[in-house]
Image (cartoon, rainbow, N blue to C red; front, top):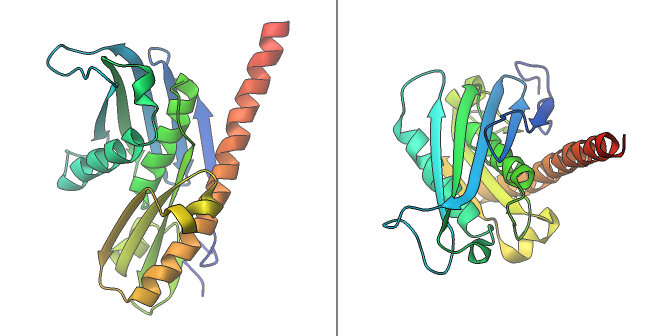
Length: 230
């Protein structure tokens, strides 16, 4: 099968990321998959307002907005999904009565936005030094009208798909068959076999994304170490 951008069905788009580009944030990251690009800034742990604070843990707040249009129901879903996903992985008990604020901005949108937002958030939290149980990586699959399953679909492919599936996994991704994914969003009409096939493909794709993110983090750490020794 030939896709509009000439990728094979199981191939991810070219990825790029940068860390620490937002000067006012405690940590930040931009995650780009060709024409989908998300920027995430993390602030905290900072003092929480009295009516928001929890005595035994930090409060996690997520805001998602788009540069390319007004806020939608889907945006609110992404906010809720990211908050529930990362609340379980952030070691919030280490910072009681504080706030961790995650601000996500969609710069370009060409499909697979929720997985890109999760990946950008994971990188920004690491950049901010927020303690996590594990890094999180995500991937999206789509089942097209001709029953072909494609990884990292563009918006054109999503618009033509019968169903779209996004999964997020904790590191190591290979253990997810035992633990289950941290996040699942499946929409449309699909069979259980198609769901399982998408799951398996997203496990492999998320492993590749995780390896890419680790390389980016190691590159920044190495660069900073060189600067500090000069």
